[in-house]
Image 1: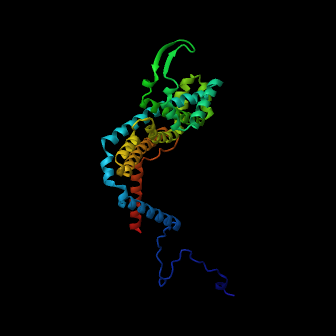
Image 2: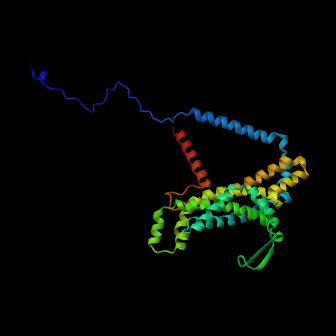
Length: 328
């Protein structure tokens, strides 16, 4: 046997292919997104429904948009709007202050304060607001005079209740009393959301109770209080429409009065009130976003983007997608 038969023939690992075999160019591989036909169908259905609603609002002569434009900035409507803003602002401030005091009383070590706070919250959360307003409006029938002096003794100062309880006073008092009951639970929930270790750390440092609450507990509780109380504030703005029943001409009261005088304009007048309430509640929602963003500092890794930042990011992503499509 010859040596050539027993020898191993080495193979070239990097041996190039024969010249007569054409090489295939590598194609760029692209990951295709997952198909979601259900999402597209739902989007199409929603767009059709929205288009039908907008078309109905624009073409239905029953809405009388020319009369809507006429009434929207009339002095009567704007005067009622100012009354609504005044009542809502005063009631929101007084209701929040009362809610803070009730929440602190509920957390107090005194059983009397806890019982009174719980009873107040239970009572005013159970009684409808319209009942409270009408009861206060007729309060002079029960107590014609109010006095300050020694309990169960002589009075030093006496007030005539009929002169003291104006329509504005009754409206603000009724809304504030009702708002304080709900605000108390919102504030108490925010205080309870603060970790117990924060209370213990503040107490271990020997800080005064008032300083502990204002500088340590309350700033952390506001992250939980803000969205809940703003939601309550939006409800308060809509609840101001009930002060019409105590003879105070707010926005809704002005619209109702004009509707009685001009029966043919009832629908456009109601649309005027609806749009103004939408403007007020939308403004409160915008303020809520920035307040929540402010108190989110230190609690999240990155602050939530503002609407302008979201729009810029979306535009940049859209441009980047167009460039990728053009490159392929």
